[in-house]
Image (cartoon, rainbow, N blue to C red; front, side, top):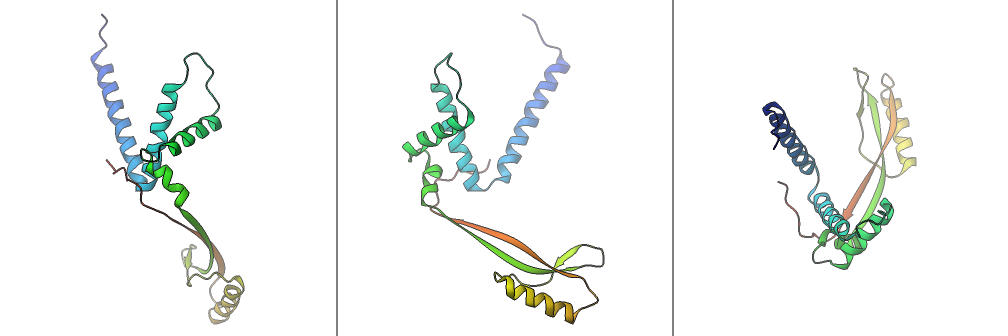
Length: 157
């Protein structure tokens, strides 16, 4: 039996620890919902991969995605985050606001948010008249809100 050099073994152990830390950090950046959906998909993807006949060509990514979602939806009690997606509602709101150029050249928010583009144009005209010494502009943002039932959550590790 061949033994590996101590330095190489130490390197492999350190790399394993770095990968474990990177995974922990990645999962920590996800919301509970994202982490739970990822868990559902990863587990079902693994299950589907184990069921794949040996020697057969592996399907394309889009086919794998369909297989995984179909299988996860078929067993909602084991994959509650996936099942809960059908009950969620998502709304997106486009909002406008004013920005004013700061002394350092950056743009700072200088108004509240408004959904009416005509109103914000009028507000910009008034702001420019009131503060002609500054540069002003209209900016926008979108806010997306998703609501739905809380599935069994996979806690952060």
